[in-house]
Image (tube, rainbow, N blue to C red; front, side):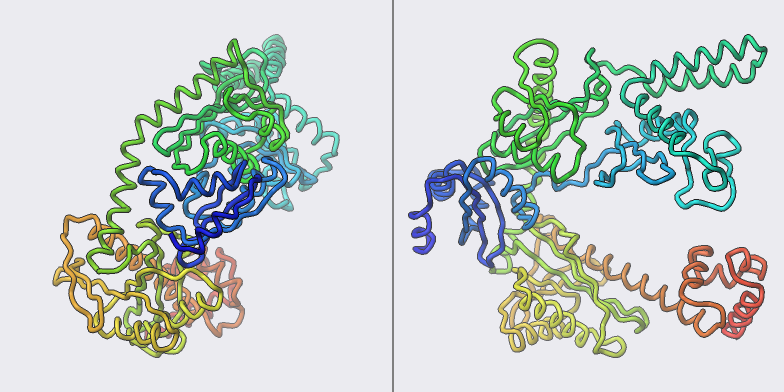
Length: 593
């Protein structure tokens, strides 16, 4: 251990707070909290760890810490630091999992919609629902019962929904606040457990319709009652009090944790959330971090109450989330908490070996690749590919792989600015210069390995920019393809030499994934750019066609080819005046000749 690190460890305070672990480039790779900073931070550098934690420790070159007054302050600060820095080892809740909700908008003329995004916009949210079908079916039922506005933008005439009785047409009629409030109150009662009351009211109306010999209306009411039963069917697990609550349980083993939450709405279990992730801190403390991220950062609506296991600091959870937290000791609620913990243990046991194997395979691929290339394990790989089909619209694209996995939010696209025509060497120089001069300027992370598309000339071009212009010493290699256009071997070094990898090795598969991904990304960007250029050149300088109409035409027809095949009448249907449509067809005809 370096002396500077030992000195910092020796003076750690005996107080609560957060610590930020950094790698050799100064990038924050892990954020944690501690009741006693001195004990927690030192524990990383003493004793034995499992392979997963040892890998984190092996990357630590420095750390910072922030002292707080209380454990709760440390927890809140940790949540904010994780959100700000997005450290690669804080993997909790980085998935894109979201559930559908039903929302009543806060507009003057409100709408009823389904959404997966919870916003602080004064709208009313109900859910979550087990799946999109359940949310959609419930919304369709409510549309029949409560005719709120349907159109996203207010039209100037009534639409089909008005004629079928599912909208009061506020676009042309005076729909009062009282009418809207009455419908919103009805929807709220229905979704908060009052559907049985609505069903009884419909049953009464069905009886009256039958008495008046209006059998068609009576049948509509009967079908509506059947639909309510189908949509609001009773779940197997339910409670009698009808309170909305979330029930949490967790299990952990060998540095991995599984958290399960049961969503109980209107007394019924409607959905289960399962999260499985590695953790590097105390299990109970990381579970509290999970709770904070779940409600405060993922914006899951808070229920009326939370049920948690006995071994969790319920007081801190309640103070953090500002909702009632209970730890039942007997009865049905205790059984539900134990059921979530049982499910978490089962899921952990079933999936642990598969996840561990996948993790090991990926990390082994990165480490083996470093050994083969005689460099440090390339934890961060950046790959470039040029695309200039037939010499037009030269572009380049870059993808980032972190620990052998794609980091898509760091992908970048480049339009070539200083090079004319199909000049791969010049394009490579420009893009490498732009990328890494910016990283140096912004103190951004630098890669452990750069992979480029091309041969010896491209490698030398990239190395020239890195070493002679930017003063950087980063290994550069290229992937060479065989006569069947399949990945064959690597070129690396100065002068570049061939490195052959076993085609059955994990490191070879990793390189293939990287090569395929950067090529796909570059080609997609080039096609988008070429499509815009074709549209621009075909429609430029035609009186009456500006940017807005260009977009409108492309959206309507989908391509220039279909546009050229259209008649004057079809162009008019797309929104062009007759004279402009005729002029466009003349332009297309002249281009063909």
